[in-house]
Image (cartoon, rainbow, N blue to C red; front, side):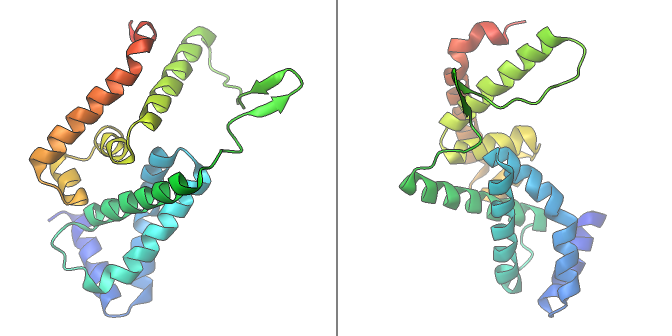
Length: 197
C-alpha cells in the first residue's frame, strides 16, 4: 500500500467517524486532479467545476458506506465520470449552445483567441489546428468513449484502474478503448494531411 493510499485510508476512516476536517483534507488533497480530469472531459471551466462539486457531494453522501474495496482515487474517478455522464444526459434533453464558442462581429462570426507569444507561428498554428481537430473529433464520440480515452491517455490510468473506476471487466475496457480509438481515428481521417509529419 502506497503512502498516498494509506493517507487516504486514514482520512476516510476519520471522516466515517464524523471528523469533518478529515473529509476537508481528502477534498483538498484530490480537488486539483479531479478538476483537471473534469476539465478534460468537459473542456469548460464552469462545467468542470460543477462536475467536481457534484462529485464531492456524492463522495460526502456515500463515504459512510465506502468499504475500501477500491482505492479512493479509483472510486473518485468513477464518481466524476458518472457526474459528467449525468450532466451530458441532462444537456442532450434540453439542447444548449456555448456562449463562448464564437463572437458575432460586423463581418460574421469569429472564434475567440488568446495571443500566444511563442517563437514559431507556423508550428503553433499547426499544433493549435491539430488540437482543435482532435477536440472536435473527441466531442463526436459518445461520452463514455471520450471518458475512457481521457482516462487512459490524458490521466494515464492503467486498464486495471479504468476497469475498477467504471466497474467493468478489464477485457471490456480494452475492447471499448480500442473501439473508441478506432472511432476517433475515423473522425480524423479527413484530416490525415494535417497529422502527417
